[in-house]
Length: 173
Length: 77
Image (tube, each protein chain N blue to C red):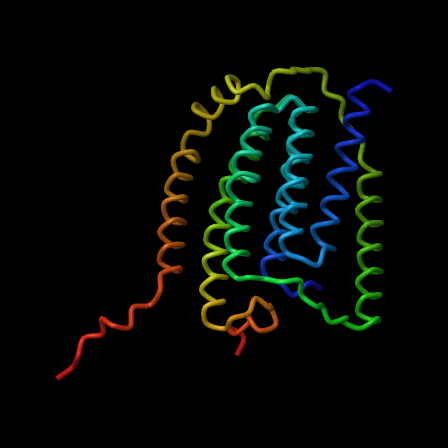
């Protein structure tokens, strides 16, 4: 049981339990905190898989920016712990059974595939130099288009979030 | 079964992260850097979607003063 295996199992347990905490917790602020912990656990998994660039980008973008946005919106709305009405035992039982059947189907589909063992093993594909070489030669067009996507998302968010101005309606004589 | 629109949004982010983890694992097995770049673009799209989605939720909250999704499906009527 090397340190690699121990870290893997610990990170997996933390990630799964925090993900369950996101869904099952009553208070929305607690859910956000659990989600941040989940993102840290998944970044740990990325480091174990030697994807260093993605681990750092995950922490900066998801845990640093998106979760702060969520927290701001939750604080803006003053959400307390909400009371969930129980949806009826029959619907919950149907949901559990259909989820279990789906899990069995996916398991059966995976079991019948033959894994291909690729011979080449390169441990350096997660480093930022190698990723940058591929990004700026092969995928330069999606990279530039994603900047346009961000621009349109920013403009859209500002336009949607603006308060309506009821003082500037021009008078009709 | 949760009614809060923000919790639903967070669950969408969780699902996107699950796909990211799977893609990174496969990129390690097949030694292909393209999958990690795809993860990067998924993160880009997720960030843009969160910005716009939260703006929509904030605007609806100003009208209705609730984030209950049973109240927020006004487009149906």
